Image (cartoon, rainbow, N blue to C red):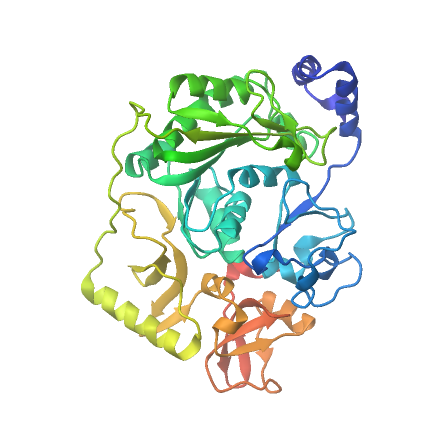
Length: 480
């Protein structure tokens, strides 16, 4: 494949790498790309994750993953060095066909893409912004670190890409996220100095994906890095305005080009005296250092690590240094909802909770939008912004009753509901295809809302109607 790479790209890499490394780098394009997935920390508390063979088809002998979590990962598994939950999987495996994929137990993700969030290290209770979030892999990874505490704002300027972002966050059981689809400037005007941590996984020329994605090669032009660098500089400028003093920002790309990496960051630091590059632990992560004049940054090269090309740098906004671009933070208060609509919706939802849930929902503010209800982790003024999800989508009020959402099911645990049914593998697949199930041989009380589970993990709701479990799975969630 190396003979199909753009000549200008090969010249750039030859100038960047020592001769012996350049030859090894080119050799990687004749070998297959590595494949990875990341286990979902929201589904496996306390870091207890199952062996890969328990959750993937075609990998060894499967047991019950809920019972195998005590020992953690099998010692023979290939763990991504920079991400404890990351796993390499063999080319023969088909993780997207696993029932556990649809239950949100893991996210299929290129291994190098797991690195930026591990460098950012979000914590429970943080206010975190993922500024270029679609399709949602890094946002879901952030949410795993946060464990449902604090606020995650996941943004992508493209409404089309935002649909995939919403779906992935809901599938992974994220409960503390607000999803917006706005330009960075508009968010910066509303959320000045608001976030503890920000991830900017910037749009880039995609040189690091050439081995994995032939379309990235076709889309590459000689002037693309310069065009991307201008866009990245603009995005960083607005991201900086939204970071609190003392907060941390990770900038990452999937390209090798210094114009989009070291040069963009060095120019940013020259223009933002309140920011500094922070040293990351390259050895512990198993990644290379950045090039001068920014050795604090990290790089992943396919001939030196098992992953595609990636760049990551950690920046900190210094305390006590004022940037002229930053203004005082705005007070975020939610827009008032008409009292009657608010009371009616909450009453129906409260009735549902009393009848069907055993555990109180996390702290937050219940926000109605028309017939829909959302749980917002903290009060926010989102008026005038394009919002795809203003919090954890709970469900809707329909014909005087509350109908729970798929997002609510995926954010709950089996023990959080009063009525649940364990499905066989055959029936779990039937449910995921949107089929109704025979309930005559299932011992359940005569209640309309039942949580359907597979090996203890929720798959969604069903309604008990005349001896049948009628699927409540949204059309977009059904498998074919």
